[in-house]
Image 1 (cartoon, rainbow, N blue to C red):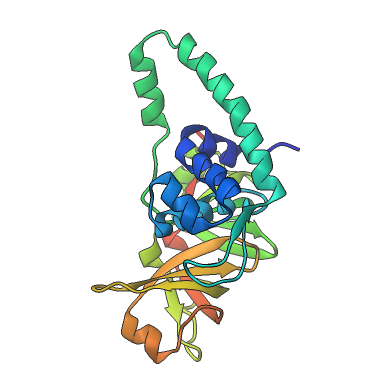
Image 2 (image 1 turned 90 degrees about the vertical axis):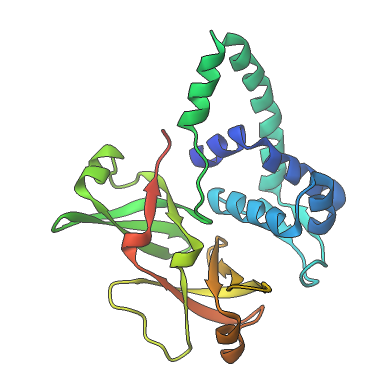
Length: 254
């Protein structure tokens, strides 16, 4: 069985994240793996969340123990990704040798841009409906979860979206809003249930809330510390999050 195309392209140009998987396999701990990779604990989990969201199955499995504790190991899928990467490295060497001039590599780099959006969710187009100047695109995320995006007709045509197209939904963390228990979601907005995995409190500014969806994918949101304390938001509790379809950006492999 092959890997999803979006994940294959991602690991081909992000070797440092595959190196992190290698450290996790060796160390059995996110904390130690992050130290070995020369990155922060938070950066390590951001990388793992992104890889898990793009994969058809989680690559890293986390055991109990709280923030900074517990253990972590690669899933069978994660081990397979490492083996795949070894083959990709050999192919990459062949491509570098075949490049006719250095500008070829610069061009490829520009064509494979990184994004500032914290949330990247792999999905499949399950519905297309025209609404005035826009198209409402339904995206099946797996596990029975579905979200909607609102994009222009031109974008639908340019991305060549049809039913069944695999895409990545991009969503900035600042666009994801946590709802109070009795608060009603805004009409027309995406509303999902999620479990709080971690709350990263900052000295200044809003806190970062890491959320686990029911299908194994993750979301990141921001909320003020006072609001989180008032509503007793902590690791392990279930919350609702909402974001408007117009905030959902859609990407496809170039």
